[in-house]
Length: 380
Image 1 (cartoon, rainbow, N blue to C red):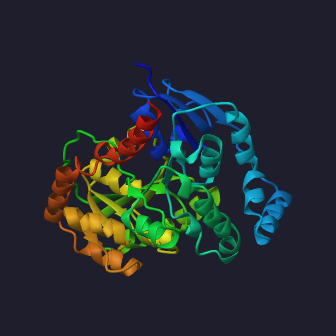
Image 2: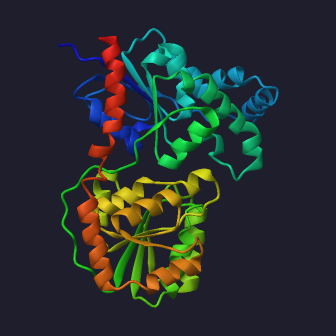
Image 3: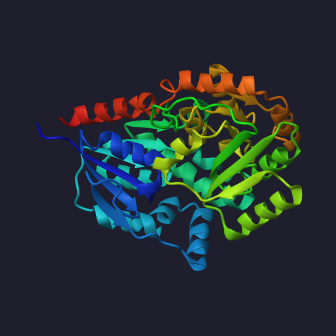
């Protein structure tokens, strides 16, 4: 039997995009998959169309803003260099199913292949992607709202990353989105012994929005003996230098570590005791965040200490995985660490072990599978 054809499109480096890679690996054996995005081929089983990553100059950005300001959203979208390149690269191709990752690919997918063939996977709440920035809200937010109305509403199905973001899409745009979390693949790992001092770890983006300064200061000031390792990606040299100065000034027992390949991340995290994360709720996406690091910590059989972002807190409390801080302050994080005992950490690590199967990507990806197979059945 001939396998259905599938396009997975993402304006990202797919080979290092954890969520899109799950789609590629999950469907490559059952569909004839073609990927379209930045960077090299993400999997030897798929055909890959590599897009050049464009960096629009100031004149291009000003023109884009002007088109949005006068309400010419269609012109602004299709004149974008990446959109233009994808349209040219895919012209004349035909696919039974298209997974359009993130909002910026939805127009290309729906316009070129028809909404009935498209599953739209929205990784964020796009109209408030940078809701803390008034200029961005006056410009890009309007364009993204138009894209949702013009294209995503026409897609056969939609998923997003958390229940609260799904509710917002339904409330504002009438878009019914199922939830597929950023869960990590199931790992068969043991529960490590609790260390003394407790080994704390953070892995992820290195920037001022992630609350890393609070992690450093809390590690320096807690009465519980701890060490803290920070595995940072996408951090500028300037930010790394600033963070190192804070570590030195506070005398914090903390280290900045080189980022790890995703294949090595969870096994490395398994050598720690507590995963920590306290992002600043600067916009809706941060307030409703349910990031992959939470699921990485679970697969690594760690205790969790996190800020009270609604979706993260729900997961931690439901499965008794750790401690949710009272608020987003450094002081509340310090108090949470002060109250940690080795016995509690041992119990939380065991809870992560019990929850690891239910919170794995193998369970979560069934949402994609149901949506994609429904589209494929229409083509058979």
